[in-house]
Image 1 (cartoon, one colour):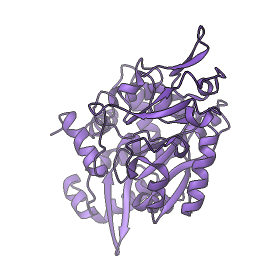
Image 2 (cartoon, rainbow, N blue to C red):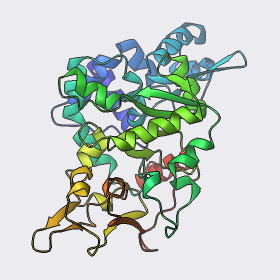
Image 3 (cartoon, rainbow, N blue to C red):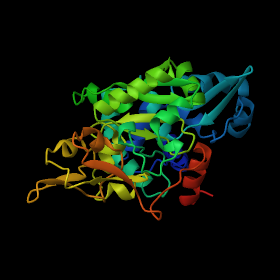
Image 4 (cartoon, rainbow, N blue to C red):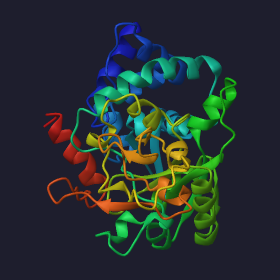
Length: 354
């Protein structure tokens, strides 16, 4: 039955977000901790589209009445998507990240955390070979100025104010680090989930529903703590994560790249007005990508544009209005996909999946 987990790994690797193999086989250890053999076998018959147990049963050559309870249980565990609407159950395969992993926030163990931290650099390296990313970086409100060519979908507050259903969930990255004694103590409830995604989280007992006002207050507190807003990479995002570079698996790993700015989806970068800069180093200390260093001769801050991801935290830290965000050039600007379906379709085409 060892082959079942290898088959599932290949099945997940054929999704847009991927699940690449490693020499150590750590990805198989992760799957064994998450899926029973029966669940892994059944997951092989799921696709990235909601289907009834009848359709899945036909593909798996199983009795729909026998597999539906197992599919429902897999949904509760966050291994697949389960939607119950108008008296009908439908099920769908999940990507590993973003997807299965984030739903494990209440099922973490030290062994699972250890294996995931060994695996995630391989996964991130694989994902960032794609032109289209799953998440993007948008600037914090205080960093936005009238000179920026900024759209509504690039402003956190506007994204939140357009939502009718909002849920806040614990950050799995900070929770996993806290469980192994490496927590940073920053905001725990910091993952904002919208619309249908919020209903799915709610049905699994993860997080709590909040108002737009509370969501805005969470963002404000997150920014005070130096957290970077990362919505899903679409004009109509399904979520916004408030991320720190010490725990967030995405930021922590792209920080190791020589030029994070070249792989992060963002349309802005920081600039320093040398005449106003006092060399206080506040911007250097808050930058999540180590993109700012002090020019020791002039005693002013300098931005490494290869590393700046345009979050604007440096702007919020400067008391002298010496730092501001500027638009990237027209050739560098990126327009996000209309929705997540388009996002994943783009990734799939870039990976040659069809």
